[in-house]
Image 1 (cartoon, rainbow, N blue to C red):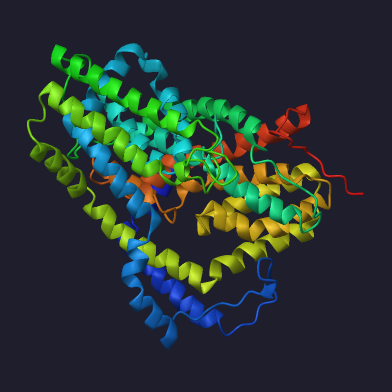
Image 2: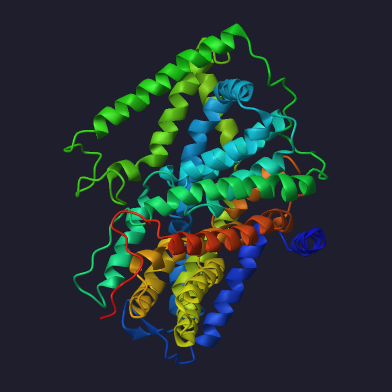
Length: 504
């Protein structure tokens, strides 16, 4: 394993800067689109019921659209807004000392041996806040590990494994449950127009997966990843020399007051969301449906939940003396995001081009057709489904985009051999999660590289990939076996979720 990871890191670090990688990929996609657009493919897109056609991005019309929409492509890049808005609030809470004091108190009550599982578990729980875990939990993992005398990159790896590698593991319902359920039900009704899929059809399996991923991630972190990254010299700008075991009376008082404000804010939010007629609920009365206003407001809520207690703490503890200090804290948090914004620009351009070209659609559907013709046994088919999704995930990062393409083929096909849509969806979610952490094309991957570079300046794409490969491989193996065992024992996948579909 060590030799393999050394080879991965060495090869990966020879790659250009992430921003340049996305730029080069953009050029490659544009060139490929010009060539492939001259070929007629017989792969049918189940969404449009038409043959997939590759669009030539080098045509005069396409180039005009690319240039004219360049600004909006960048500004509408979803991770950009999520990161910047959340970091404004988190930056104030960090600069004021609110987060630091909270970590000190947490470290006092959490045994060092349990820091790793605690970080992984919290990272998976952050899924309820959509993508906020990328901008909140992952950097906190580094701070917590370094404060405990451990290497910060191990904390980043553990948190990244929980947030992204364990994306399908949830203790509570999330917006992603409702999003995938919509595609699954639509696909199932292609074969049976009376079939309905419950939004919580994978909830029980997700809860069990949370426990399993926490334990497996704990073992991988401390047995494989941490011994490896501990050899890397910490030479970045974020060295925490402060004694994290002590805090002043004034800091403690500030934390209590700010913590009370945070609790009252959360209680007020719960009170507003509780009534069945609440404006925070979706049209179906659900709080966790994808279109519910509260789910769409997760990032602004994180901004408020952190900036308000951060300001309160700053003035009570004495770290802030005027409103100018609050603005300076925001300025400081934004000044650290320059390299990410550059990468985000080229990443947005590449992803837009990749989607517009239809090359990703062609690859995904062609792979699904190959799996369909193999006619494997049920257990092998489920493993093949997980593997197919994992491979496609390297090319198409969005879970909804992949499932929109794969579900109309895979769900009816597996129903025809007696596998329920709910089980197919669970297999998809495992494959979607396990390779998130090793593909530089995942939209938040560049951000995690930046987090690492704050502590180890020489960190490159290869360094991060080599850190995450053990999680990806072992998660894939253990999670696949876990699903088959769960299936064999007959434990419920979720609410109203059968394993089999009656072929007759």
